[in-house]
Length: 472
Image (cartoon, rainbow, N blue to C red; front, top):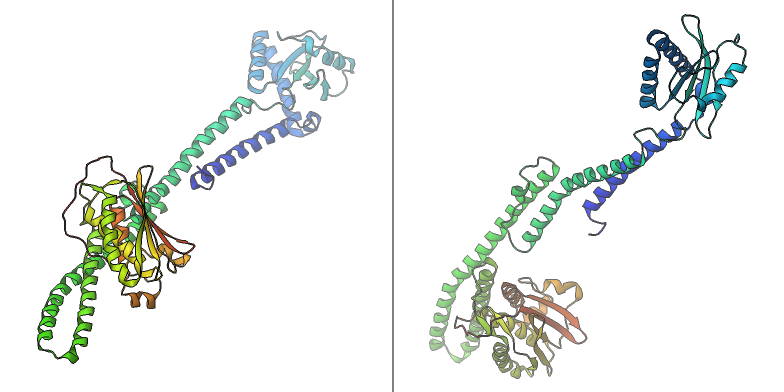
């Protein structure tokens, strides 16, 4: 999966944002915790808090005794990480905690005159732990020495430990993953539907997959469904119109042929040329109607590929023989380069029609005195048919359009050749109906069309006898 995907962009962006937020909070906590204790002690709130802390300790001791004082000390350490020590005026410890660690503080406090007003000053007994001490007089007038040793400066608060930070980032990653999945899943569904729609499945819709959503993405899906319905209706009406027109033209064309035959019996020699022209145009219209009907059947899905095995090399030999018969009067020929035995599943008549259209198109544009080269080979599990002419080729910008119905590369050239732009369209639909693909490319001296059709695993060959489809 590439980073350009929307899912990864949302997921990684959210996760990095959450991780940076957690990192900034941790850094701010560390900075706040490493601030100089003397600086904080000079501020009123901390100084007043320590004073109240010391008075509370002496009050608990005098009213409730040593046991209550030890409980007070234990709670203080659990809640804030601060160790509390209380001594009498002679320096004798009144708490059960290890008082030896703060003995230096007590001695320095005892060295100060007791008649000075109570004051706070920091004394560092360890490398990084700050210890505070002061004289305090209880409500009963009894003097005590109060010492408080704070948690290690620079250490993170209890919540911001390395394992908890890692777990927080991991949880943030899971939440961001689910959020990114929720935001991008409808986009993936819409992409799949669009792909199916582009492949010709005009009945596919997005709404059934997004029925539980009520956001902008669901609105986008509904708008796509509305567009798909309109496009499907337009295409369906266009195909129906072509089919109806084609059917309706068959009857007048048949009557025109009969009338033309009667006219030939009663006309003079001078009118023969006009009747020949009428017959030629009538045949062109009749061929066009046949091609329209064939294309309509292929696009509407009316044609079905029968479960038959076709010997593709034999079919090509027949098509090439017929094509050579038409090419010789034009001083052209169709030459076989290779015919490998190939078996494919499908209809021989449909395949004959599609391949014949390609070869006849090549004969039309190959230069006089040259040959259209046809080869059949196998590659992995596909049969490969190539048709190479020696004509002017097709502009690269128009290669992708030559398989579209009624598309003309050169208007004057197509009209002079009698083509209407349906032959390659019929070939394209026929090959796709058999699960294959067709493509065109310019080579040094002409156009090369390659047809790929899946091979059949069945060795038997059945020759169908269905009516041949019209070709361009």
